[in-house]
Image 1 (spheres, rainbow, N blue to C red):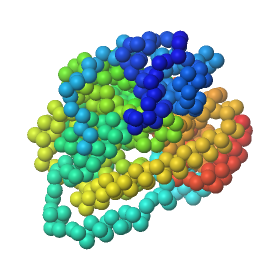
Image 2 (spheres, rainbow, N blue to C red):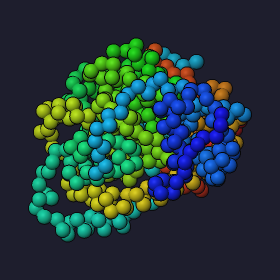
Image 3 (cartoon, rainbow, N blue to C red):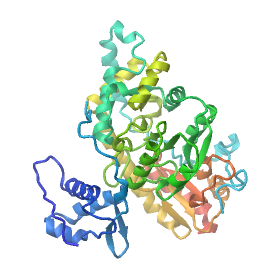
Image 4 (tube, one colour):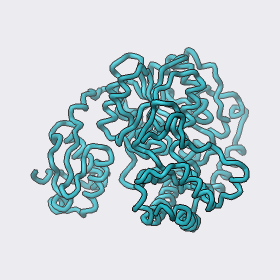
Length: 490
C-alpha cells in the first residue's frame, strides 16, 4: 500500500509516536484500513514522515500489542481481523469524567503443594515469588511526612465514621487517576473503596446475588477463585487461548458473569487484544443481566509501549465492573482496593449494601489521597517502572541460557516471567530440583482450579519466576543456581 498520509503536529501536546498510533488505530476502527491490508514498512513510513524509525517502531509495537496489527516475520505488518467486531456505538453525548497432555491429569497429578514444609523453607535462598514487590525503594520518609502533616492538622471530623463508599476526596482523586492512566470513565459516586479485593468481592456477592454462575479463565488468580467458591457460586473454568478467555466456550455455559484480567492476565501474562475484548463486551450485551469483572491488578508495570487501555474504557453499555488495588503499585500493607460499578449496579449497592461501613481508616485514606494528589505517587511509579524494567531486562538476558529447553513468555509487563518446558518435563520435577539448590520457583498449576475436565495444554509444564523483590545480584546468583538445578535438562 502507499505511505499513510499522517499529519504530524507539535501543537497537540502529543508525542509523535502517539499521533501515529492514534491515526492508524482510528483508521482501523472506522474501516478505512481493512483486515489483511499491509501497512508500509517502518523504514519507509519513517522516511515519508521524516521521523526516527524508532518512533514508528514504537507505534507499530503498541498497535500489535493491542491486537490492531499482526506482525508476520519477513513480510511486515498487517491489519488484524477485528473490523466487524466494532459495532458498539459511541454515545457522543455521554459525559467523560476527568475529575488483574493436560495440565492436570485427573486431580492434578503434577500439582505442587501450595506451601512448603518448615524444613523446605529453611533451604530457600532465593524466592522468585511472582507476587512479591520491592519494598527497599518505598518512600518511607515521604509517607511519614504526609502522615505527620495530616495528624497535626487533624480535627474531630477526621475521626468520625465517614462515607461508606470511602472518602469523597480520595474517590475523586482515584477517578482522575484512572481516567488519565487507564481511560476509565466514571463518576466519584461509582467508586467504592475497600480494604483489599476480598471485601469488594464480598460486596459484589450482595449486589449480584447468591449462587450466580460465573466464568473464570483457566488458569486464573487463585485467590479470586477461592473467594467466589466460598460464595457457593457455580464456577465454569474457561480454557484460555493465546488471546485470553475463549468466548465461544464461554457461550456454552450459563454464566452471568465473567471474571477476566485483559490488560495482563495472571499467571500467563497474556494481553487480550482489542478484538477479543469486543467479543467479550458483545457477549455481555446479549442478555440484560450479564457483566464482566475486570481485575486490573498490575497494569502500571508495562515495559514496552504505553499501558493497554482498560476494558471498561470500551464499555458503552454499563457491563464492566472495574477493580484495582494499590497493593503492587505502592505496597501490600496499604490494603486499599477500589471498585467502579456500572450505574444500574450502583443503585442496587445503595439499596442493599449502603449500610456497610468503609473498611479503610479515614486517616489512611487521607494519606493516600495526598500521596497521589501531590504527585508523589506518579514519581514513585516512574521510579519503580525503571527499577522493574532493569530487573526484567537483566533476567531475560540471563534466561537465554535456557532457550534450548524452555519457551520464555510473559515478558514486557508485570513482575514475573514464564518458562515452559518444550519436552514437557513435569512441573513438580522442575520445582523440586530447583528447591534442592535453594531456589523457590512457582508452578502454574497453583493457579488452576483443579477440577477434571477443565484442562489447558497451552501452558503445560510451566514455571513462574518473579523478579519484583530480587535485585540484580540476587537474580544473577539465583539463575546460576537454577542452571545447576536443571543441568540435566539443558
